[in-house]
Length: 407
Image (cartoon, rainbow, N blue to C red; front, side):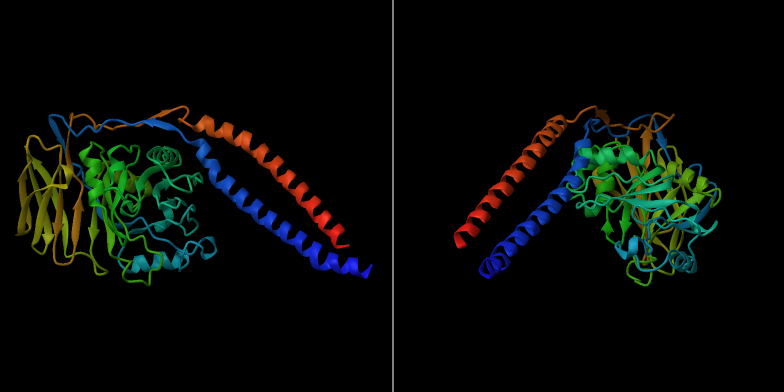
């Protein structure tokens, strides 16, 4: 009897525990994989609009009606959230306090999947959050957020997947901005030839410059405005904090006024330093087809950029620059560069004189392969369960036979 007990203890029990552990681990991996795969059953196909460069007899100047006050604003900063998993170092109040000390008028917190509230009527009166928890780092800022949208495609995202998320986000907030596109657009931003239903794009963060992606969108007729944000996770890191911001021309600091200014392009991005910028925009006016850009501060270099990111003209060491917009140019945007700063101005674009054209991707009810995927899931899961049960029965029979042989 003791011999049988020893065999059980030294052979059958460890094997049983090992099989149980292996099965548990396999089940956990399978469950996690199934959960991660479920969003892909929600995929939709889209008919994307063909590229259609800006056209029309009139020129839209985003600064023509900018008669408010210029406010310094950062829309992208992270505080401590989600038990530190998102790498935010300071609490909300400390992040806001730091930006106030740097002279910011608005410093909105944009934690992942979380709208920060509860600090009164200070900067957090503008609700913003960063959406996205996928391997491709395809993230978005939702500005004027009403609620958090939790849905995302956690692994690779196709063009249609990105469009589906953008459409969802517009239902939960006032404006949607593409965050740090240079981190996830590995093909020169070609997806921005087609993506629609977003309002803004971060062209400068501590991660890099995304003017190429911006020009891709503008060249193909998508009227999106520029943002420049820190995207800091630690306000004590001077390399990531206080270097990129927005100047927003709004009637007041009320959220509705800031959002209204962003919507029509009364803003420009700045790459500077903690002490601010040594040059700032005074005005951009149109005199017929001539752009007149005037800045205050030190003399600067004006670069006029057209479709495809092509440099059309430069004016060096000046405070005012004029440029005649070519008849075949769908848009012209201006960068102003000084010793300590770069200003990214929104483009002047051609339009019909009534409203800017808005291209739209049209969803298809069922994506190719979606129904097949659901059917496959419904068929394979019972098959897998039966197969696992058969394997367990066979393993039990083999174990029993081994035990009998040993006895």
